[in-house]
Length: 381
Image 1 (spheres, helix red, strand yellow):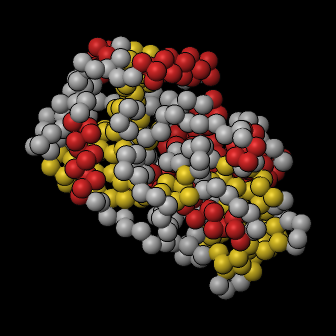
Image 2 (cartoon, helix red, strand yellow; image 1 turned 60 degrees about the vertical axis):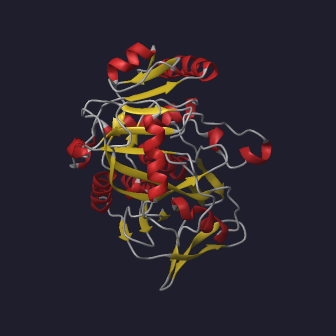
């Protein structure tokens, strides 16, 4: 079976690896260098604290791989398990926290519903006077996306995947009933299946196959900051869902600060600034200072960058065979890195078996938007 994967980020590489491991003849095409799109600019978060069962299950099945990545792939991805801490000052959000934790626990995640005082024990710089409740999972954390790309790429090559960076797809070929391959500037590549794992470029690839997907590239930023109060390395990644602000420890005493405030509208994925906006960074520090003592006027911005999220209207991916021979695995809305291991296995199941068994992703069909069956993810960072 011939399969062409379009996209050399972590989702594409994971898909290519599992497809080849399961017996397919795989070619992977990437218009730039491997992992240099959204993956390279990711914060590398790995968490199970989501508000919908399908996202929790994608996390848990991916965690099965992240936990053994060094043994299976021969690469230490610097998987740090500081935990994730969600906080809120809103009663309505706190009630949703309680419901989320119950659902997460039922599925096997080790989340806890905790008090502001307990949250402050985990994050000593947290200012808790206005907080109502929090949730915490000590198994959550983050890893190095670039090292994960190296591991998947190395193993994919060993499984026989033909990886071609700097090879953009110029068209997706169809015979009127099904996708039959792709075209590049130099050749036509026949395929029984084409996997669209192009991230921020996935809508463009879909249009080549006469498919319209509601996936839009959005610019997101991160700043590395010197905190005004020492931030110990064991402080969890802390998210204030009320303001959209988050931070976590970074190397050399610094902190990584981000958030989904000040979102840019749709951008051209080929022409956007990947440099940090200083005004945005100042706002990010101000937001973090509103609920912690770590940040304030003495915080210094070291550096930062911007990357792209591939966003759907409900912040969930599309994972399906969209049309005959055309598999979509895109639109992760910032969660693609952490869900890549499960997604790659699901893509392989879709190709080899016709339907997945690892996770029920029927709710992630693209038809959900026109049918009014969107599922909203509330815990977006």
